[in-house]
Length: 77
Length: 323
Image (cartoon, rainbow over all chains, first blue to last red; front, side):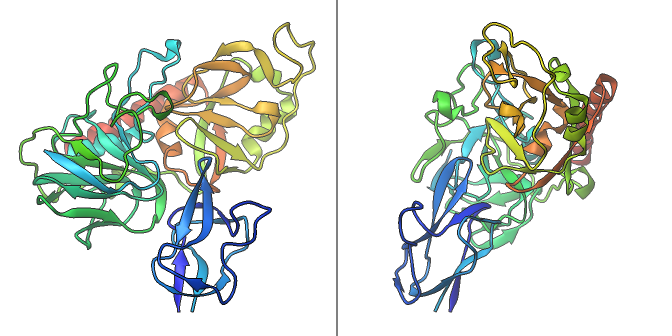
């Protein structure tokens, strides 16, 4: 099991836009470089990507929740 | 001499102490958001106070050195690593050609300054190497650095290893950060209740905060003294007939969320400004993360000037400590 951490402080989103489904759902395969979520800060969106492969388990924070750098935002199996 | 950007970080830019003298033409002063930290970084590696550094916000870049040099990282607490081995912040260290500087997760503060002996040697624009990204002016091609950029570094004497700024002189915001404010030209536009609420309310940094301005939220909606809006001011009571904005001035569009104008701000416009954060406290804003708690504290001109003096003295104390 590995955790994906936010690289920076901001607001974490599960989806690319409110109309779209979350980037990942439980059981999805995750490859290195896959986008897991977005961080909004300073009027820009930064992609949070997986640095290890695995199987997506769950988001560790709510959609649109404030996060700080190093917070675990998602868990992989 | 050069350094190469392996990974750029979020919005890493070349900055120095800025380009004063063009604000009346709409070109902001620019320069480091935390000028004290940039100055200290330069002192640590034996540069002039205003030599150009890399400013990185919230996350560090990855940088490969093209030559032996002395390096120091000041400002935020962002764990520093050289070829994966930890190095102290606010402390100079020698690097060899080919070594790689990288960073961990941000612990405290918002912006770091990476100084290298000899300084970043991109061509100055209007007397400064500071990057004004929206104006595509200064820095490295007028933009934040990108992966693969090779950045020129000036010639330097061999700097000394292990010089460190004493903890007590590493100025950083408290929790909450207290920002001192001098009420200004349009202070009278607010009702007494809103004037008091501005200083009593608990504010937090909004995620939109950047080099142009820092936005704060969480306080009460401001109320304005009723008046017939002058010609050209529009109908919103937070509007005025256009005026000049100063560095540090606080505008409140719609009376809701105050915005403190910072280094890359516009120089004028049509929002009333209730006052200004004093110059001595602008460095602290540069170290605020989104959602950081903030209180505004009212001061008068004498207090503002004495705070400015104290800040200058702190810089001289750092200089003395590094002799």
